[in-house]
View 1 (tube, rainbow, N blue to C red):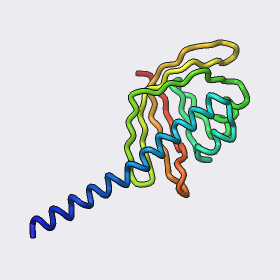
View 2 (tube, rainbow, N blue to C red; view 1 turned 45 degrees about the vertical axis):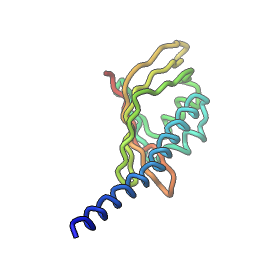
View 3 (cartoon, one colour; view 1 turned 180 degrees about the horizontal axis):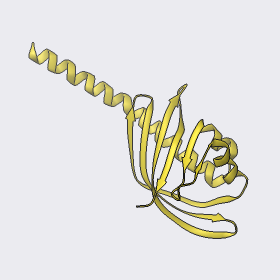
Length: 141
């Protein structure tokens, strides 16, 4: 009887891990789509992978909603020339996901080109089968 219970628990654990793999890949793909849209200044692309309730926190403490975040980039006030992510870790919790990583890039703002280097925490939410960014906070390490 103990063997049957152990096998049942083990089977459920394996099924749960197998179910997480596609969602983790989908979250990571959404992160890449967001970065590509930011690099291209693509308003529709950014809107497609962000929540209307987005809270986008910058490493300097400034916080933007979805409209301000998209307008800043698509409107040309900020232009990302390079975005590199490293040390990425994705944790799933049902229809939510937490992504932590290191963000480095080259950005142009007000005619000045600068390098940025910080860590970020992103909260993604699965809505109608699509992963969208709900919150993001950059922070200096």
